[in-house]
Length: 302
Image (cartoon, rainbow, N blue to C red; front, side):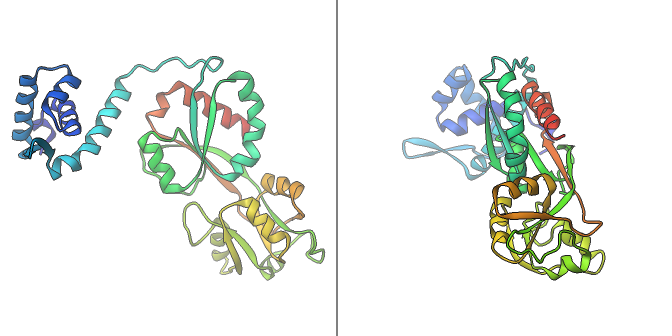
């Protein structure tokens, strides 16, 4: 059906009727009379060419089409309400808001601890709720309003064009090996790099290849994988007792070398850097609280 042939005023009526499956209760939610709601139901049936609600026993039940439409209609109404609501001023000092962030363990371990003193001073009442980043799941949560920001997504990741992607951080590469393997030199050329088995971090854009693997492939080279992991700390523990190599952002490598029996070594020239993005939904770009926190996150990256 063409949009100009549908009365958009009926969307709220549809949502109430299908949710309640009861004309009287829907009328009470809509602050309408029962007769006006019944009339609106008849108009919906005519415009959708669907009964919408059918009588079953002593009650009404939504039709399969109405059930299928309900989540989409709710989402449309939620977006309209969000769009039409005037942005409220955000006062960090008095806010008790919970911010939901989808992040990598790099952000959690390296960036957030340095941010927290600033946040505690400027916004002592806010809560930071972290969720582990998963590209599609995190973008879906962003789309649904369940996540405020996605932080650390690889800059090469494919995103829907309407999402707002901002450069967040670039990290130089470093390598880790176990301290017990003293014969591994402090600087590796490409041949030495490829001689060792590698623990590979699951890439955020392609489950089969990482940025390092794509860089090697461009030179008609490949490394030998001995394990694939999703957490830097677990990966560093693994290589601490196995003669192998882990390539990761340098600040994360430095941190792990303080915590675990591993040491940093320099990889071959040309290893690609980590380019990470901060992603938000256009609706969040009007949210003063999200914009304030995004500024703090960008400032903490340097």
